[in-house]
Every structure is written in structure tokens, then in C-alpha cells.
Length: 65
Image (cartoon, rainbow, N blue to C red; front, side, top):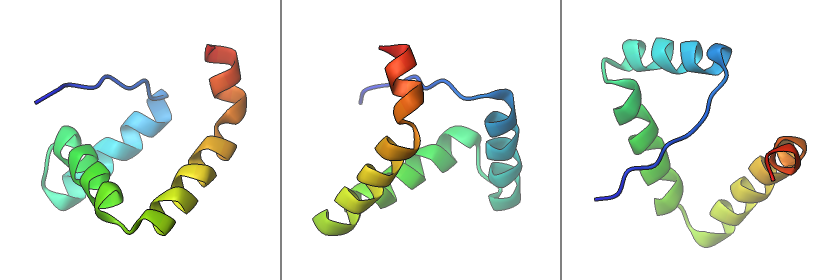
């Protein structure tokens, strides 16, 4: 198994922790479940979701590059 590190704003981290608590799982488990759900979707839906995320965060990605 491979580990991935992501950077979240404090606001997003707090929201993730709140959702994880609501579902009674750890934040890491919630993220893993979410990624697994995304990857198990049909290719067309995955591409649509990926395009949305990339477009939404394009300015951030450019600053990080």
C-alpha cells in the first residue's frame, strides 16, 4: 500500500474532521472511502469529476507549480 500526503486549508481540515465524526470514522478513512468511490465510478463520470476539480483548482495548481 502507498501513502499520499495532501495539503488542506484549516477550514477544509475542520470540515473533513466534522464529516468524519458524523460518519464515525477517522478523517483518513473518510478520504480513502471517498477516493475509492471516485475510482470505482464509470470512466465518463470520473472524467467529469476530474475535469471539475482541475478547473476549480487551476489557479492553485499554477501557483504550486
